[in-house]
Length: 519
Image (cartoon, rainbow, N blue to C red):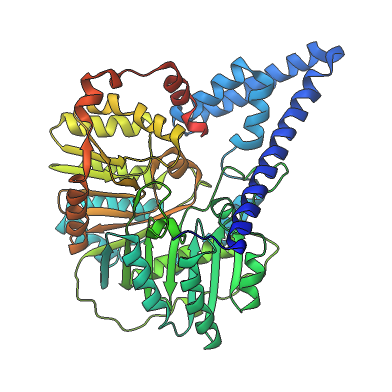
């Protein structure tokens, strides 16, 4: 059911208008800078020399950076061919990781928060002994993302976003102390209204409720009064990186995480946002396929820390928490399941691509099969190599992508990767009922991931993301079974892109592939 009310139409119009206005302003800024340089003809020779010197410095610095060459090359090409425009765009949107001030803020918060996580060395050693290949990946996460592996945690898998929503509503209504919700996109419509009704009731019962969302992700769904509406009913609300005109060195980094934490006891995460289309209340791209998980037990502590990091680091103008212990209390719980659960987070502010490294590690460690579901497939040479090498080893490597795109240009880039994958044995499936937005992987019936991380540059290099690595538990088989069931509704396009006309890239696709890292 679509939102046909005057308020709903006004809300969407407001968000789209703000987005268009901001984009126009940014384009005007770019044009102004270009005119500023090109218009000073009498200094043309000096400007040309300075631009080339600066361009050379930027290129050398970029070349020496640890970022993958797939990300570097488009910027190097752009700066070499169009020095002024290339430098202008790079300085405005290409610098990944924000300002030194932003980095320091996150560093300060992490130095206080991350030590509050348990080390769980014995659990790590147990996993290493039980499933060595999963233990290796878990060890990587703990060493480089500082998030430990847990047991004593029950996990429930939802093969549809609506099932996850219904479970969340049920648990939200039981909250006694606090509710944390962090989402890339919130739509002020039916699905959110059901959640907000529960949140308001819990506020009246004395529960502290915090809501955190990404402005860019929600810009077409809500208007600028959304925060005021929440604050008016006692719900604390913050916005990540407001999208507005002006030079913004942090513009390229968005909060793509999806987290709900209830009393530090129960947590939810997965691929779905809190907007109608995710729950098939509207159908802009056919049926919507999304998934999620519910955690109850010790591992929820990591989700709580992940939320508190963003809440306290997002701005230096807000009043932050001075004491985290009240949200990280221990409570007695005896899990029915015995599996290993490891929620983790990924940040663009460091030089560690945790999300990509976990995916690559799973492919590298797989012996029988490794399957993925992703809405976008725009990957680095390193990821391509890992996938194709596994297929050459005889591993059954499969990737499920949408049958109906939400962004046609990005879909064209996604398909441009098919040929180099399938010619070496990777199988590609397109989900014909509509758009699959889930982000999952599973390997060898023993390990899986579920979270927010797409197989694309934005998720792997530019966004704040989160996921959950799971090993030796029932949910791994649940994910495997769901992917098998999903493939039954897919068209297998492997042969089409291996030998047919679709295997050859047109010029437009080649250009889009070249600049895919900038999309």
